Length: 142
Image (tube, rainbow, N blue to C red; front, side, top):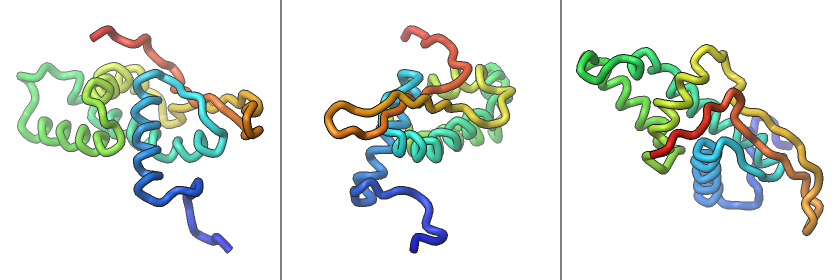
């Protein structure tokens, strides 16, 4: 019995699983949505939502000009970016998370992702889904 054992294993060892979800979080935040299996999409929410919440907790600091931030606020911002950086392995995507996605999702109390079921995959019949960010702003150039 799997009582009190959270998280799916997907037939991978822990290092492979962690790397897979880090890559998926980065891709989801970069592109706004990705196509994957339903099970992976449901499990991905456990990593994406707290990462987005990290950026929302410091939006009051991000909104200030860099010269106006106190040393404590700078430290809070750096800490939040490092915590989010555990799952986002691209600096441009991390910056987009804090400076573009954060302000767009600021008033939203959770539920930052949507899963849309797409049917079955041709090769093996696995149920497929698209996981995407809700209230997504257009991607900024640069």
